[in-house]
Length: 238
Image (cartoon, rainbow, N blue to C red; front, side, top):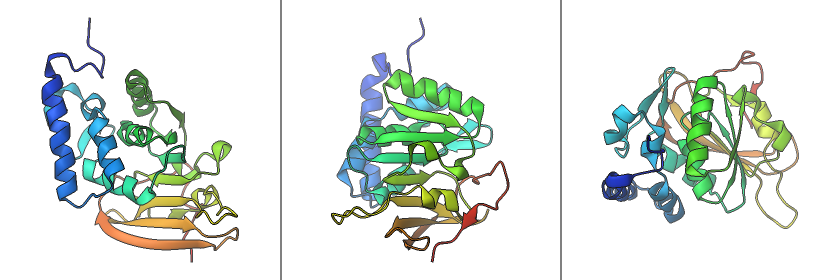
């Protein structure tokens, strides 16, 4: 009988040690959120990649998962997750399920995760792996630029593909600041063209259409965020 994705059997010590080494490599590269590092140290990344690539699963690199998509580089996952500042029980929307690896890291941090993917085959595989590993992620097939209004508002939204602009529906689905002084929801999204994107964090600061704070960080290169309906649902916050 074939082993399940989370069954490490005789390779358990090897994969465990490789996860530990990956965590140390990420810490050396400047990831200092210990909760993020601990979550990455618990997630079985090898379960999310093709069996032929499992020897490379804990290298700090993106790997192909089919349909011209990749499982994100661990540093990128750690970087985006750190910018989200996830707390236990936060409602997090992920745009671009892909392999499911980012969603698994968010689950390990105690978040309630909702994820949208436009490729049916990738979504089916991600659902299977996440379920086998015991990660409770709500998923749907659809246009990620539209978000998932049914479960909004969100404490955080993370986009795992490069966007030429900020989709307006995602801004509207961020949680408004709470009366007791709690900051509003946060969107982390790589913004730019095919030559590369700037990791951008948008924080909702009020209830108005322009009540958002924008911060820009380092440059990355992602696969493009594609809309099913075109690009007329975007905006750039002031």
